[in-house]
Image (cartoon, rainbow, N blue to C red; front, side, top):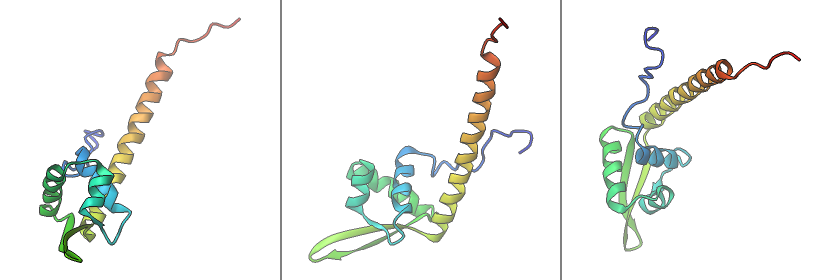
Length: 120
């Protein structure tokens, strides 16, 4: 890692996709999970797109689905698994480090590229 400090190996592609990041972020604040409709509304995804991304997350062991009924209507609930919650927290730590490193690198570039004022 010392040879490639900006490789950020913890940025797992399962998380690092816009739609899945939105799904996981939606679920992170709801330990008991959310209904499919609620996740759809929070993420702005279509039913088909949301279904496919949830399938990927479920296959990776990050989310669990519960299918049942509310009254006579089918209801699907989605929640982060314990593994999913832990891995998502690790992912966020890596992402925060990447952002800090980028901000430091950018600040150093701005400081070097700013012309110096001549003394009066």
